[in-house]
Amino acid sequence: MVTGECAPGHGSVRGAARVSGPVEQGVAVASEDGSRVAGRLREIFEGHRLSPAQRRIARHLLERPEDAVFLTGNDLAEAVGISQPSVTRFAVALGYAGFPEFRDDLRAALRDGRGPDAVPVVSNPVQAMVDSEIRNLELLRDSLADTRRLTQVAAALAASRPLPVVGLRVSAPLARLFGQLAAKAHPDVRVLDAPGSTLEDGLTRARDAGAEWTLAFGLPRYPRELRDGLVWARRAGLRVALVSDHAVGALAEHADAVLTAPVSSQFAFDSQAAPSVLCTLLVQAMVDALPTREQASIEEFESSAAERRLFLTE
Image 1 (cartoon, rainbow, N blue to C red):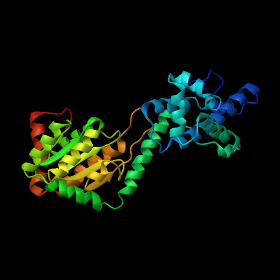
Image 2 (tube, rainbow, N blue to C red):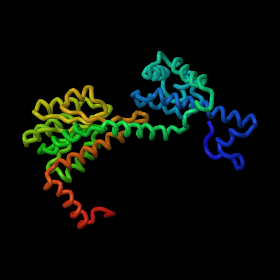
Image 3 (cartoon, rainbow, N blue to C red):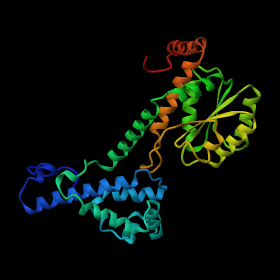
Image 4 (cartoon, helix red, strand yellow):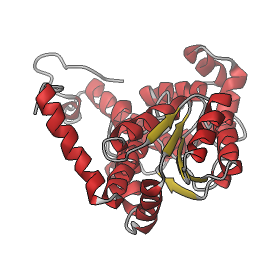
């Protein structure tokens, strides 16, 4: 795989394809073959949820696509530092009978479409990760062509006094983000990010104080404690609005309303760009649903912040 800067006078790799020498032509062919394999790898990985260990394998292959078609399961296991059975489980998770079948699929990418038009747009693994998030944001945008569900859920949350907001483990930062933003307008937002009896007590106290709804963030990997918390919330008489990546599943069945945003699994750990955008959109819709006198509290906070010089920029 050719990376980095070329020596003076040799130009870029793209330029090397125009040189007639056999070495330069071989580099260009290898680059095109690697691009085909990388494109096929991204197609295979798209839409599959892999474990952190399996993502290490995927990243290794994407970083060395020109080598992927020659590797055995043992070669790959040794290169990544995992067991050979883990490589087999990786292939099975992608829908293949085993690693040889997975490798055969990659080799087919080299046999098919040898013409230049068949070469996919080249992007490095980091760009591919960003591309996956762009696609997720496009999916979120398209899903919001009809905003009625978003505005209905936001109005219900705005009317709940207090409003408990639940997020555990990886979802806790989103719950805190929502809580911090929403509290600038909503008079009583309560973020609950601890599992077990602490969560149950917080939900019960909110219900006793008059809450009608709770908002929960449930993103992969879904904590068992969050499911138990949603069960408890409904048992306590609360209705549940859930932000997740799927409209069905072990969490969604315990929710009265579900708002979805896709999560990218091409990183070592899930990236949550689309759920973060949905979080802020929900805050915006909730603020719009609040009475005018409560929306005014946002301006009051800004005036107070300016007087106290809380921020470095105005």
